[in-house]
Image (cartoon, rainbow, N blue to C red):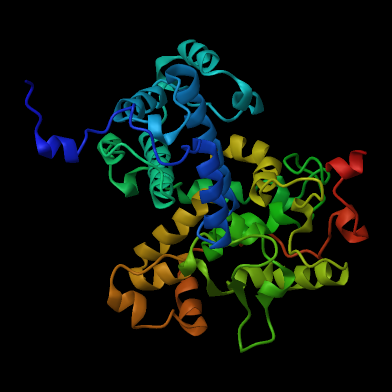
Length: 404
């Protein structure tokens, strides 16, 4: 007679034949639940939600096409490992082509195999971001009662950074920054379409004020691209300031991103307050209506970078780097980390700095902002000139509605 252990009878091993009490959900179904919840809670902005959805689709496609796995009940650690290995061979240009979303995994592997070795394999931060989102997906599945294999462990797949955070992005030199601000979009361009070709026209728009806001205020791209005219405040206190908060045009990255920033004197000299009034008089509520198209759901920052593309490629520097320059310049001037964190919209490093003190006042900010080197002194102040369609209150000529 065979011997049967009572302990084993009470605790059967988890296997693929163990059926859950309810049909297991697909990765995409749970992914949409999670995206909806995070978006409603304002934990994720539009960019984060879009990245998560793209990641869940890729993971689902890899699991289905290469492993026949479509539900959480079928998922094992070997499948997570296989996905990590796939990310290590996927070409670095993945996602730049709209066709990537419809290509099979076999086709993506074929394309990746034709790339040079230097262009194969996602970077460590990108892979870790994928794994972080995947971990959130598994946690959500467990929360709603999915039967997960207890052997699943995403943490084991994460890679460590091999360089310090400060060494990941080189801070551009002072000469590079000044060369950027000597570009035609600031000094005079040929036309509103050809803002990278020298001419005698200066149009006040996102491409003009955006990089200046990034350099002197340390703002994130979506923060300044999504400002409203009411976010620039000049009638409350002795000095104008910018209020960065959630509005109808974009969300904030996190809670500490909400802040008030003293307006740097150079922005006042270059006419930002006059621009705000001109935009208001033209009937707009967005500070940069030139970035918005009624027929598009793309991020405003995407259009902003698209317009500056030729300039960014020619100069080898982008406005995103100006935020790092802002922090570095103030650090070199011995501005305390706590004050820099307040202006950058970063959280404090301890309970003392985060909970028991108020953000730096506008007066203190002005004192620190005046320590920034002025790299736009050569740009002459000119009367405000809006883009033609902005002045007329029309949709942008490049938008789908205008083409129709």
